[in-house]
Image 1 (cartoon, helix red, strand yellow):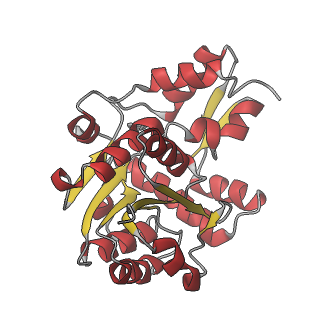
Image 2 (cartoon, rainbow, N blue to C red):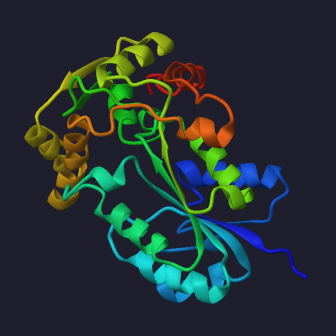
Image 3 (cartoon, one colour):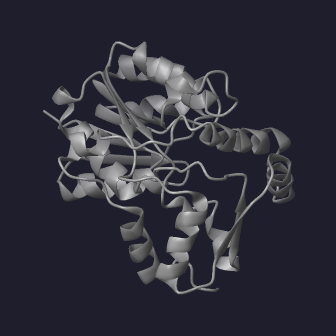
Length: 279
């Protein structure tokens, strides 16, 4: 009998590529799929999904940035014989109320929970790696980060911990079925404190400045983002400022059996790799 595979969507992204690599090292059959992978997956092309889902046992799902498609994907997964889904979502998604931020994640959770499949939801805090692999990186390389975030701290989670947790859940599904895990780092930091740690680790004089929501939206639209998308991103900071997701959790420890990595450990690793060196 052909051994069933583990499907990793978003396989070139921050979480997906780390998950796929870890599964391969465990000699677990992996189908790494994304818009730019050898195995192509695109949320806007549902006609191609059945091929990607063929002979899959467990799927790691990173939802698209719009509500809706995960509902159809779950139906296709059920028809294809997939047994379990592991969904990446946002920290405290059920406490966001009618916030404009994260509607796609709340829609995806609804789709997964309403399915006949086994499921686990991983709700993650903001990634530490956003500072060296994503939206905060270029401003830091230029010397300054400006965001609409003030004194409410954020328990940044290390993506390597998240990937390790996802692999554990994918390969030990019986004890994680029907669970929603809130995942955070071991302590909370303000953005100013995070930038200060990065400055010290990198040896560069980096600064943080708080700006208004409107200034931030103008900055994002000036970088080519649509007004709608810019307002959605700004809504995330409004949610953070409410303090609803500022505390730490024991989700990673309960999955991994160890404490999560600290932001300081992340900053040391990234600085040693030259993440914030002047280009």
